[in-house]
Image (cartoon, rainbow, N blue to C red; front, side, top):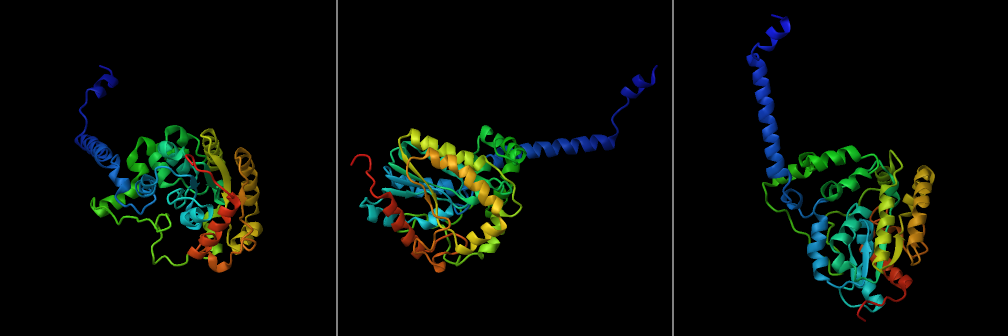
Length: 340
C-alpha cells in the first residue's frame, strides 16, 4: 500500500476537528449577525442626529412638508447654515415653503443626487436649483461618508477613486460597512435617539446650542485639505447632478459661498495645488449650468461679511446667513414658480 493511500485514511486529529468546529460556529454567528442586525435599516436610523440618518430626517422633516418647492438648495452644511429659506422667500416675494434648503453635514454631490432621484416627484417641479461645491471635494484623502456606505449602488462604489475596496466590502458584507453605526445601535439598545427639529426659517436645526464656535481656520484647512490626494469622483457627480437637473427643466446656478479670509489665505499659500485642481474641475460644471454662478469664496468683504459672521472656516452665523441670503435673492432677481 502506498504512503499516500495510507495517509488519506487517517482520521482528523481531535485538535484540528476542534479548530474546524470553532471556525464553523464563528461563521454561522457572523452570518446570523449580518442577516439579523447589520442589514436592518434601524442600525442607520436609531440616531436621527447622525451622518447616516440625516437624509431620512430631511425627507421626513423638510421634504414631506413642502410638496411643491420653487427653489431648491443642494450642498454641505455650509449652505445649510448660510441660506435661510424665509429670507430668500421674503426677498423674492415667494410663499412659505417655496424655498427648500437640503444642505447636509459633510454633504457631497452624492447626497444631492440621492435626494433628487429618490424624491424626483417633488423636486422636479422646482424652477431653480442652487448646487453648492466645496474645495475639499477634490481631496481623495477624505473617506466616503456614512451615506455612501449605506446607499451607494455597486456602480457608484466602483467609481469612487481610492476607496473602491472598502466600499465593495461594505456592499457585500454590511457588518463591515456599518461597523460604526452598529456600535452606536448596540449602545443605544435599540432606543431611538433625540429627534431633529426644523428652525423657524425652514432649515434643519442640526447644530446643538452648545456647539458655539468651531476650530480655527488653520485646523479646518488641515482637516479638509491635509494629506491631499487628487480625486475626480465628487466633481464628476456634481456634473451629473447639474445635467440631471437641467434635463428636468430646472435652471441651475453653481454656488461656492464665501470662506473665512484666513482660510482663503491658507489655501492660497499652503494648499495651492488644491485650489488649482478645484478650479479646473469646476469649469465643466459651471458650463453645464445655465444661470450665472455664485462663486464668492474669496469675496466675503465685498459682500459685507465680517469675521464675526463666520463660526469657523466657512460656516455662517445667523447674522451672516441673513446677509448672504438677501444677496443670493438679489442675484437671482426674480423666480417664477410653476403654477404661478
